Image (cartoon, rainbow, N blue to C red; front, side, top):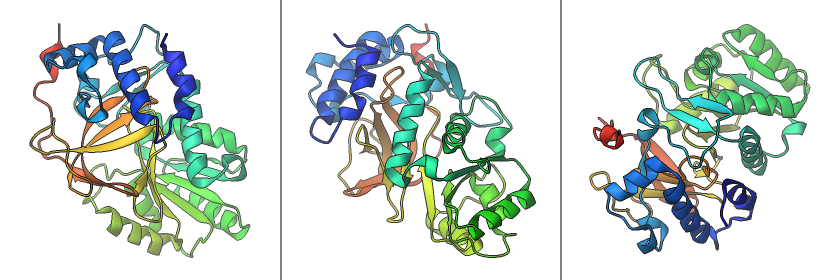
Length: 327
């Protein structure tokens, strides 16, 4: 008998050999226990029993999180994460189990970068700290707590204090991870006075209207030059997902075993493109047991043997049919 807890307890047993089996089981469970997803699948006239591989699973447009309560099962959420943005309707993700989110995010980070307890975690996330219910702030705050180091913590606009701290940590040879929103990192890079070889920067995206959007290669070159470090990474996460992907030094985003990227045609949301071809990113995140594990994003990208790349956003990507399931 499947349940939210059974899917959660089995998550870390997922691998490349059994991924499809787990995904199909979760798809049928969520169809039965998620009213919004069930209506969406029925609207497409897809019969769950006829779905035999992951490319046939319907992917819920991410915009549904703005207009609907996307919830699998019956529970009172421990927290409702909300997307960033100063105008318009924000996405809302009802979190059934915050401890599970902590376990998932920690394991992904540790698998990529090593134990958090041996590091210093800093957050430069002004546009996120200034609002409530950010999943990114929640995650970084959890990492700050795990690090147990008195120097770990958040900075809002105290650039000079942060620079002083970074220089002291680098001089002491401390391994330091700085999570930062793009515009703040660029501003900080412009006033750093000397290189910091022990600093690891994890940019989380977001110019927030503070300047032109840079392609990731250009951004990373500016950060490498400004901070004097070779350790520049990216985090790919979103309000609607529990899991994160990190871009390492090879230039590709890498997913945990329970997360898979499929690329769909730009003009046909039900057709997938071949590996290496550009299209729109679909995500299977099996950690999303409590909401929907099958998400059609609005990000352009491509998938390869070593991971995936994010190339930008769709133009005019708002889904005009998001209210079709209102009842």
